[in-house]
Image 1 (cartoon, rainbow, N blue to C red):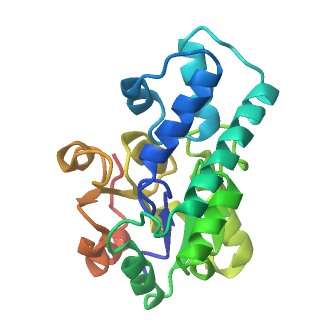
Image 2 (cartoon, one colour):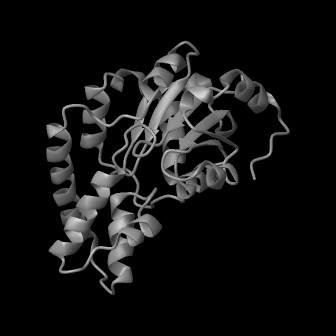
Image 3 (cartoon, rainbow, N blue to C red):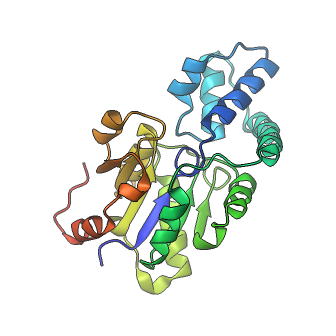
Length: 238
Protein backbone atom coordinates (compact mmCIF):
# COMPACT_ATOMS: atom_id res chain seq x y z
CA UNK A 1 0.00 0.00 0.00
CA UNK A 2 1.40 3.39 -0.98
CA UNK A 3 -0.72 5.69 1.16
CA UNK A 4 -0.69 4.97 4.89
CA UNK A 5 -1.26 8.33 6.61
CA UNK A 6 -2.95 11.67 5.97
CA UNK A 7 -1.60 14.70 7.82
CA UNK A 8 -3.95 17.68 8.00
CA UNK A 9 -3.19 21.30 8.54
CA UNK A 10 -5.96 22.73 10.73
CA UNK A 11 -6.70 26.44 10.28
CA UNK A 12 -7.63 26.98 6.67
CA UNK A 13 -8.12 23.27 5.95
CA UNK A 14 -10.63 22.09 8.57
CA UNK A 15 -11.90 25.35 10.06
CA UNK A 16 -12.40 28.62 8.18
CA UNK A 17 -11.18 30.94 10.92
CA UNK A 18 -8.42 33.05 9.37
CA UNK A 19 -10.52 36.23 9.73
CA UNK A 20 -10.81 35.54 13.46
CA UNK A 21 -7.06 35.04 13.80
CA UNK A 22 -6.36 38.22 11.84
CA UNK A 23 -8.68 40.24 14.09
CA UNK A 24 -6.98 38.86 17.20
CA UNK A 25 -3.50 39.61 15.84
CA UNK A 26 -4.71 43.14 14.99
CA UNK A 27 -6.02 43.50 18.55
CA UNK A 28 -2.63 42.47 19.94
CA UNK A 29 -0.85 45.00 17.73
CA UNK A 30 -3.18 47.74 18.96
CA UNK A 31 -2.41 46.62 22.49
CA UNK A 32 1.25 47.15 21.63
CA UNK A 33 0.42 50.65 20.27
CA UNK A 34 1.03 49.51 16.69
CA UNK A 35 -1.30 50.08 13.75
CA UNK A 36 -2.53 46.81 12.16
CA UNK A 37 -2.18 46.12 8.46
CA UNK A 38 -4.33 43.50 6.74
CA UNK A 39 -1.78 43.10 3.97
CA UNK A 40 0.95 42.53 6.55
CA UNK A 41 -1.03 39.69 8.10
CA UNK A 42 -1.49 38.06 4.69
CA UNK A 43 2.19 38.35 3.86
CA UNK A 44 3.65 37.30 7.20
CA UNK A 45 1.20 35.16 9.15
CA UNK A 46 -0.70 32.82 6.85
CA UNK A 47 0.53 29.28 7.43
CA UNK A 48 2.69 30.17 10.43
CA UNK A 49 2.07 29.48 14.10
CA UNK A 50 1.25 32.31 16.49
CA UNK A 51 4.82 32.53 17.73
CA UNK A 52 6.27 32.90 14.24
CA UNK A 53 3.55 35.33 13.20
CA UNK A 54 3.89 37.64 16.20
CA UNK A 55 7.67 37.46 16.30
CA UNK A 56 7.98 38.37 12.62
CA UNK A 57 5.36 41.14 12.64
CA UNK A 58 6.88 42.74 15.73
CA UNK A 59 10.39 42.41 14.29
CA UNK A 60 9.24 44.16 11.12
CA UNK A 61 8.08 47.02 13.34
CA UNK A 62 11.45 47.13 15.08
CA UNK A 63 10.29 45.24 18.18
CA UNK A 64 12.48 42.34 19.28
CA UNK A 65 10.77 40.58 22.18
CA UNK A 66 11.70 37.69 24.45
CA UNK A 67 10.15 34.22 24.27
CA UNK A 68 8.51 34.92 27.63
CA UNK A 69 6.83 38.02 26.26
CA UNK A 70 5.69 36.10 23.17
CA UNK A 71 4.23 33.43 25.47
CA UNK A 72 2.19 36.11 27.22
CA UNK A 73 0.82 37.49 23.94
CA UNK A 74 0.01 33.98 22.68
CA UNK A 75 -1.96 33.19 25.83
CA UNK A 76 -3.92 36.44 25.56
CA UNK A 77 -4.79 35.59 21.95
CA UNK A 78 -5.69 31.98 22.82
CA UNK A 79 -8.12 33.08 25.53
CA UNK A 80 -9.76 35.60 23.20
CA UNK A 81 -10.01 32.98 20.44
CA UNK A 82 -11.65 30.48 22.78
CA UNK A 83 -14.20 33.08 23.90
CA UNK A 84 -15.13 33.91 20.29
CA UNK A 85 -15.35 30.28 19.14
CA UNK A 86 -17.39 29.32 22.18
CA UNK A 87 -20.05 31.91 21.27
CA UNK A 88 -20.44 30.88 17.62
CA UNK A 89 -23.65 28.84 17.18
CA UNK A 90 -22.20 26.91 14.23
CA UNK A 91 -18.47 26.59 13.72
CA UNK A 92 -17.20 27.69 10.28
CA UNK A 93 -16.06 24.24 9.15
CA UNK A 94 -15.15 23.95 5.47
CA UNK A 95 -17.62 22.26 3.18
CA UNK A 96 -17.22 18.46 2.88
CA UNK A 97 -14.22 18.26 5.24
CA UNK A 98 -16.10 16.16 7.82
CA UNK A 99 -17.39 13.94 5.02
CA UNK A 100 -13.81 13.51 3.82
CA UNK A 101 -12.53 12.60 7.31
CA UNK A 102 -15.29 10.00 7.65
CA UNK A 103 -14.47 8.67 4.18
CA UNK A 104 -10.85 8.12 5.25
CA UNK A 105 -12.05 5.74 7.97
CA UNK A 106 -13.01 3.19 5.33
CA UNK A 107 -9.37 3.09 4.15
CA UNK A 108 -7.87 2.41 7.60
CA UNK A 109 -5.34 5.25 7.34
CA UNK A 110 -3.53 6.93 10.23
CA UNK A 111 -4.62 10.55 10.63
CA UNK A 112 -2.81 13.46 12.25
CA UNK A 113 -3.31 17.18 12.76
CA UNK A 114 -0.32 19.49 12.33
CA UNK A 115 -1.12 23.04 13.33
CA UNK A 116 0.40 26.21 14.68
CA UNK A 117 -2.65 26.64 16.90
CA UNK A 118 -2.67 25.62 20.56
CA UNK A 119 -3.66 22.12 21.65
CA UNK A 120 -6.59 23.27 23.78
CA UNK A 121 -8.34 25.17 20.99
CA UNK A 122 -7.58 22.48 18.38
CA UNK A 123 -8.97 19.63 20.47
CA UNK A 124 -11.98 21.70 21.53
CA UNK A 125 -12.99 22.25 17.89
CA UNK A 126 -12.34 18.64 16.85
CA UNK A 127 -14.49 17.42 19.73
CA UNK A 128 -17.23 19.92 18.93
CA UNK A 129 -17.51 18.62 15.35
CA UNK A 130 -17.27 14.99 16.54
CA UNK A 131 -14.07 13.97 14.74
CA UNK A 132 -11.46 14.02 17.54
CA UNK A 133 -11.50 10.24 17.86
CA UNK A 134 -10.27 9.78 14.30
CA UNK A 135 -6.96 11.59 14.78
CA UNK A 136 -4.15 9.45 16.19
CA UNK A 137 -1.77 12.38 16.68
CA UNK A 138 -2.07 16.15 17.15
CA UNK A 139 1.05 18.30 16.83
CA UNK A 140 0.50 21.94 17.80
CA UNK A 141 2.41 25.19 18.13
CA UNK A 142 3.31 24.22 21.68
CA UNK A 143 5.27 21.20 20.46
CA UNK A 144 7.54 22.95 17.96
CA UNK A 145 9.46 26.21 18.18
CA UNK A 146 10.18 26.43 14.45
CA UNK A 147 7.22 27.57 12.36
CA UNK A 148 6.44 26.38 8.83
CA UNK A 149 8.12 26.13 6.29
CA UNK A 150 10.31 24.16 8.69
CA UNK A 151 9.44 20.44 8.36
CA UNK A 152 9.84 19.89 12.11
CA UNK A 153 6.12 19.59 12.90
CA UNK A 154 5.49 17.06 10.14
CA UNK A 155 8.53 15.02 11.09
CA UNK A 156 7.43 15.03 14.74
CA UNK A 157 3.99 13.78 13.69
CA UNK A 158 5.67 10.98 11.74
CA UNK A 159 7.70 9.97 14.80
CA UNK A 160 4.59 10.02 16.99
CA UNK A 161 2.63 7.88 14.54
CA UNK A 162 5.46 5.35 14.43
CA UNK A 163 5.65 5.36 18.22
CA UNK A 164 1.95 4.49 18.40
CA UNK A 165 2.37 1.71 15.86
CA UNK A 166 6.02 0.60 15.68
CA UNK A 167 5.21 -2.25 13.27
CA UNK A 168 4.01 0.15 10.60
CA UNK A 169 7.47 1.63 9.91
CA UNK A 170 5.72 4.61 8.33
CA UNK A 171 7.90 6.53 5.87
CA UNK A 172 7.52 10.12 4.61
CA UNK A 173 6.83 8.78 1.12
CA UNK A 174 3.70 7.05 2.48
CA UNK A 175 2.27 10.27 3.94
CA UNK A 176 -0.09 12.73 2.29
CA UNK A 177 -0.08 16.29 3.64
CA UNK A 178 -3.10 18.57 3.19
CA UNK A 179 -2.29 22.27 3.26
CA UNK A 180 -3.88 25.57 2.19
CA UNK A 181 -0.87 27.93 2.06
CA UNK A 182 2.40 28.06 0.14
CA UNK A 183 4.42 28.04 3.37
CA UNK A 184 2.55 24.94 4.55
CA UNK A 185 3.09 23.18 1.22
CA UNK A 186 6.79 23.96 1.49
CA UNK A 187 6.87 22.48 5.01
CA UNK A 188 5.31 19.23 3.81
CA UNK A 189 7.72 18.98 0.89
CA UNK A 190 10.66 19.77 3.17
CA UNK A 191 9.57 16.71 5.18
CA UNK A 192 9.76 14.68 1.91
CA UNK A 193 6.02 14.10 1.88
CA UNK A 194 3.54 14.52 -0.98
CA UNK A 195 1.25 17.51 -0.58
CA UNK A 196 -2.30 18.35 -1.61
CA UNK A 197 -3.11 22.04 -1.81
CA UNK A 198 -6.75 22.82 -1.06
CA UNK A 199 -7.81 26.19 -2.47
CA UNK A 200 -9.50 27.59 0.63
CA UNK A 201 -7.12 30.48 1.33
CA UNK A 202 -5.10 31.00 -1.85
CA UNK A 203 -6.19 30.75 -5.51
CA UNK A 204 -6.15 27.31 -7.11
CA UNK A 205 -3.62 28.31 -9.77
CA UNK A 206 -1.11 29.53 -7.18
CA UNK A 207 -1.22 26.34 -5.10
CA UNK A 208 -1.27 24.15 -8.20
CA UNK A 209 2.20 25.37 -9.11
CA UNK A 210 3.60 24.29 -5.73
CA UNK A 211 1.68 21.24 -4.53
CA UNK A 212 1.78 17.70 -5.96
CA UNK A 213 -2.00 17.89 -6.37
CA UNK A 214 -4.54 20.67 -5.94
CA UNK A 215 -8.31 20.59 -5.33
CA UNK A 216 -11.13 23.01 -4.62
CA UNK A 217 -12.47 20.74 -1.90
CA UNK A 218 -11.20 17.52 -0.38
CA UNK A 219 -13.87 15.17 -1.71
CA UNK A 220 -12.44 15.80 -5.18
CA UNK A 221 -9.32 13.82 -4.25
CA UNK A 222 -8.94 10.48 -6.02
CA UNK A 223 -7.33 8.55 -3.18
CA UNK A 224 -7.04 5.36 -5.22
CA UNK A 225 -5.00 7.18 -7.82
CA UNK A 226 -2.83 8.85 -5.13
CA UNK A 227 -2.31 5.46 -3.49
CA UNK A 228 -1.13 3.94 -6.78
CA UNK A 229 1.12 6.95 -7.42
CA UNK A 230 2.80 6.71 -4.02
CA UNK A 231 3.47 3.00 -4.58
CA UNK A 232 5.78 3.90 -7.44
CA UNK A 233 9.37 4.11 -6.17
CA UNK A 234 10.19 6.65 -8.88
CA UNK A 235 7.87 9.36 -7.53
CA UNK A 236 9.73 12.66 -7.37
CA UNK A 237 8.94 15.38 -4.84
CA UNK A 238 10.09 18.65 -6.32
